[in-house]
Image (cartoon, rainbow over all chains, first blue to last red; front, side, top):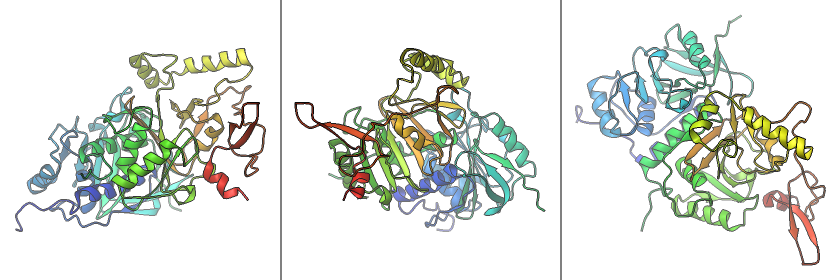
Length: 194
Length: 273
């Protein structure tokens, strides 16, 4: 069955619940990294964390745009039922390769900022304790987060995204079975190493 | 008959989970959601229950309080509801709970990182008495135009010499959104500021969810020359002697007898001799 449809969560209820709590912790405490564990084995090029996030949150009421190719598309559409959409209107955008510019996604409106998109990005690695300096809601003072695999101008894109608060895009960074969150409320500064 | 885990079907949980995540990303902003009919009437915590049902898992330990008490009808029945439909452990001890669902109080014991407090909210819109049109109050939030509320506060002070709201005193969250703290006593408002626990709010009838992430600024609305100054009954608790907890006044007979006791029953039991 190597070319067949791969299974989703072995336990749909608790797979999704556990993954949701990891996402909730990641977004309410930006810069913390959370390992999902679990047994989700998605088709390439999806990493387990990114696939789990999409399976947990997308459904027929929440559209999905991704760049992961036809095999992953069959997997994601079958398990979520999420409809396709244009990049500019999608609720969820999953980037396994180069991420689209944050400005290309819907930020919602001043009256309905909650309509802003969620961008799920697969990166090479995420590590606590070094790299960017984050501050804002969910952070007691400052927190450090190092991410490799994002475009060089990501901090500038993030500054523009944060500046239009309460409108904006929220980002979930995924590497392997680990994830971290960047809600639009957070300020990101590139730390100058001594 | 078997229920879906934690009563709600998975599609409903996903919808509520998406709303909770957006609420966390925009602290204090009310996110609309498709509240379901629950097996209890509006006003008994339908919003809080739906939030709790969407986050709870088998390893959680749930505490439910109603006005600070673990042993009132509302608290007992909601605790039993989740013990039955979600198979979770329940507790009355604040320190042991991973999720605390509350009606109108914040426990006296300082909440810790990793804990989640879920508030039952009857009216999520802080401007509703001043601007009943939702279309208009939505615009005021978009513009961060909260002059109406400052004027109400000013009129309170001009008439009564102090802010007249003993409970549900409005707060500014993260310097951006005016938010209803739910009808907690003003005494509890300072506990919301930079609380280490995640605060989630569910309003079932009004179909709104909002949130305050940990360590987020929550400032009770006031004026420089009339700083926020919540009232506490000037008595020690008649049971445990606490002088720093919020008190309930209990009428003990029909000839004017009364006693003041801690509203937070767990806090009082831990302290009582």
